[in-house]
Amino acid sequence: LAVLFRKQTHVAMAPHGKGKRKRNDEGQADAAAAETAPSHGSVDDEIRVDFDARAPCEDDYHGVRRLLAPLFAGSAVNLSELTELIIERYDLSTVLKIAQAEDDDDDVQDDEEPEMLAGDEKHNVFGVMGVLDVHEDRDCVRQACAWLTKRCTNPDAKKRLQQFLSKKRVGWIISERFINVPTELSAPLFRTLLDELELDGSSSGALEFDHFLIIGKTVEVKGEKTKPKTKAPRERVFVQPENEVFAEKAKLQFSFAVAKSDETNDNKPQREVFGFSAAQLKQAVARIESLVDAPERQMRSQPTL
Picture 1: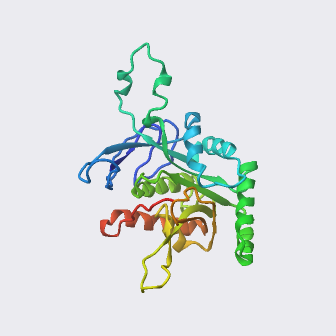
Picture 2: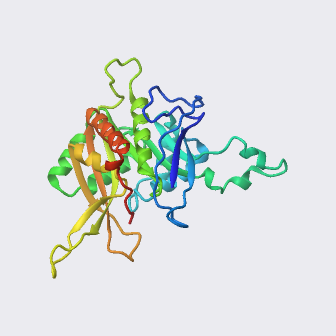
């Protein structure tokens, strides 16, 4: 799968670009393509996909909600309200969609209803990234914080989590995408998020939040046996490989198990929670960019549950 990350008129986003994003800003840029094995056909097949990165709108509601559902499986978090909040905060949110060619509309006859294209793949949301204030006066945010606090069973970690959430300016980063969307796209998405978070008029690069929280997905899988008749060790695999960088930088970290969605394998899904400062976020994003730019150290997509 070769993917071209393309900036469209809805959002000004470049892999290492500068500037705030606004709805309907114009701009276009290409980013490096990434290759993985296709799911159908021979390994020599290559499919080129153009992605649009844009601010979310009401039409993206179902696509965004679908991406959030696995992360909060088994929780009492109001996903409908959370989805609406992400869309409301469009100035700090981005969705990935299949790019629509400029002449696509020419293929639609005058007597065809717009709904005929509603189920087409190009209208689906393949990824979402945004940041919310953990002190937002919304039930879904309070429910998410309560869920994390309840699931953190280690007394010391729970105390650190409560202290972290009580800080004044804490941003909750939401970063979800389908497993077949290349990891390489995380770099421009995070870079754009940093640009959007940078306070207007700040000469020091200060961000809107001083601390950040990320909830990631991992899977505990069986490793290889080192000796005969010994139990195979279990290894932690990050569903979104860039979260491994946040694990290295985080000053707050804990995990908890969630229910399996597939009983046919022995993998154990978990949620990893990372808390870090604004400075650590900048360091992590720079590290992600360096890994993406270095083919010999490129991050690899990981299996899901």
